[in-house]
Image 1: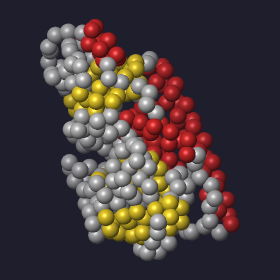
Image 2 (image 1 turned 90 degrees about the vertical axis):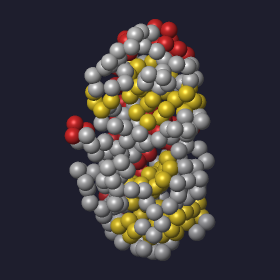
Image 3 (image 1 turned 180 degrees about the vertical axis):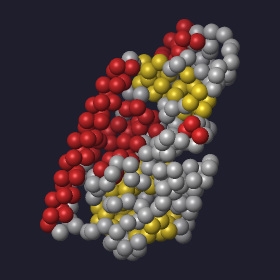
Image 4 (image 1 turned 45 degrees about the vertical axis):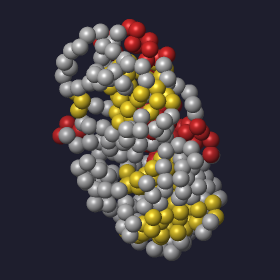
Length: 322
């Protein structure tokens, strides 16, 4: 069973939740940029939340299925259709042999995710199926999907379903509130005036932004005095300030280590929303405490776990009747 790529879109790649545990050896973590959307696309199908998905950026592909399958879509709205019939988000969808699933340009947001029931039949590399473009690891030959590529998927049964996730779970993509952050390791090294400027200013996401990092254009953020820092491990959401004073937010494909001072760390709950923002969009920041960030993350985990249990019960009921 395969998915054949008829049109590749802008950037389409295989991603899961990342190649964790190898950063100390110089291997990028990578993985889905919007991990909430990737998780929910899998959860609605009863898959493990870490199962690989297709990440589609700005403009989606056209895909032909060589056998019957069950799929789900979540994230940015790319107006997916099957034979010109609209495909809803957050719902198990039956797709028949030789049918074509077509995605357009994203109306809002940046990235859309496609999951397949029971997952993709591709090997793991260092415990992950994620595509690492720089090292050419994982995914399909370590790169973005091209026309005529064939992506193997596992066989799954077809059964009528009438349930799905509420559309409200995608509301974070349209949320325009400030991106919340906690203080970074080098926060105290910055000028008091620059720290206030960082909180009070509006920045623009640069066109030079990508999966490695979001470069921001805005007022310059300065240290109290220039100094050399010891290189240390990086994390998804670190807000680095290079010598030119223009912030860089490290994203999924960040380098394993870095030496620029970090004024803050974007909280985990706001990384999906940040990942859906496009070059040219405006972004501002709000500082919160580490305790607040932890409570928000615990609540998010609780909600996702509840959805996971509910969806698995639905699939278990289908298994009983089939």
